[in-house]
Image (cartoon, rainbow over all chains, first blue to last red; front, side, top):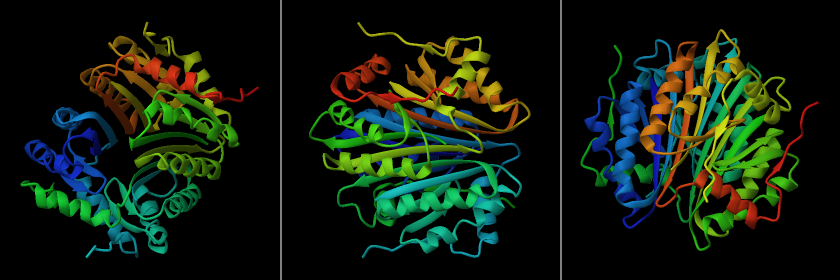
Length: 106
Length: 106
Length: 106
Length: 106
């Protein structure tokens, strides 16, 4: 199943980016497929592994911040495996429009 | 400011992927930076342009589906421009771990 | 249509509760039905009025906080009017279990 | 800590309200404080109990629906106990405006 996780530490001593940069080892050590993006991390795998990831990320950030906000979205469809890559490829194949427009800051 | 938009049509005649594939022209016609990913689209720009995009995507999907679910997240920080690209580059530079692990379905 | 709005000011001079307490006049001045709860405000009305409320609440909080987080969820179903009250009454009528358990702090 | 859970079954044989009406025993059997509202259920308690509730609700709905959407929001603040009731009472005490306007459908 697909999921998306966004965790926001509030009131930390360290900078936001520094705290977030310490998190990628946690999905990397999990059995999940994942991709970090600008507003969170998309995930694919079992619900238990997803909820375990939520627990570990929360625990890690809570050490450094007085307040931690978590937003988890799960989309569980029958027969949906390999969706993290495939869903985007389908949309790309069907859509006549580019799927991104990004201005790289100089 | 950064945002993320996920719109889910429910009970449509057409397939989900077909409906979603018709949406990318809407951000492409807007003044926003955007990137479609597996669980939604990340956006950068003014709040008015973001809310206008919500309205247009909702309107388009509502033509084809009896029920439309919208999830919009906005993260507005003072002085945060070019964040859609830069925030990820910062995390990549600081983190010693890859920011994704994807299994491409064969 | 039904919606839920949660707005979180971060890094404000004033306390969180003080800032949030100043917001209720904004839905009260709108044409929306609304109910404030512990994690946000549920809303019922037109999408334009809902998006206008997002804009006004964001604008008000942004005066006092360097960072503002917004989470908006919309559930738009054909023929769904009066849902803010009715949906809960339906669930209450059908469910044999109390719909809340709250411990009032002394 | 405070949380909010919204679970949406899609493509079920039974009606949405019927499915949702079967869920309240699950929080009632948990150690959590909870209140069902029109767009989800607010919760207060430990993260483990919250994540366990997500697992059980998902499991129950997945029996009846081919697709299940989950939205979980957690707000964990140091020293925040009894918040589910108290946060609202604080806002009510400070705000000069009613915290709801509901039209009861006839």
